[in-house]
Amino acid sequence: MNTDPIADYLTRIRNAVAAKHRLVEIPASNLKKNITKILFEKGYILNYKFEETENNQGNIKIALKYHPETKTPAITTIDRVSTPGLRKYVNANELPRVINGLGVAILSTSKGVITDKEARKLNVGGEVICYVS
Image 1 (tube, helix red, strand yellow):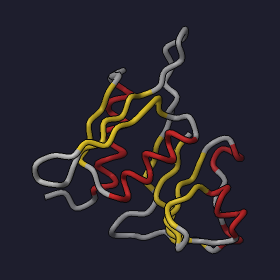
Image 2 (cartoon, helix red, strand yellow; image 1 turned 90 degrees about the vertical axis):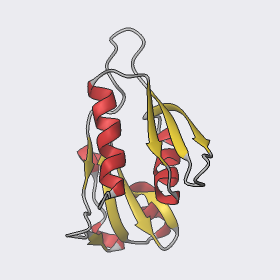
Image 3 (cartoon, helix red, strand yellow; image 1 turned 135 degrees about the vertical axis):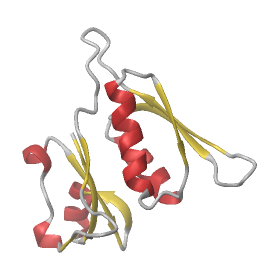
């Protein structure tokens, strides 16, 4: 049994990047699908695909992105912030900035799973899920 599926999701991506894999396959959930969509929109992953399985949970296949010449990964760091044992919530005026705006903080808000920049525009706070840079 996995007590923190989001940490497992982030660790699988981190390990695949460290091993220079092209694809990583992760068990799906709605929160993981939303995080994957944000990573794709912000250019951290090349592509993704949601697959249904016989147990109706499904899988997420993620194609990782690397620089064509230097082979450096697009994701350099991906860190879990809010854990099941210690949740991290922020107000709209306390939203974090990752690497002074170069990275992305992913938040779970009342408006859905969004980035820190979108949360500033909507003036909402929420739970900080992770930092990506």
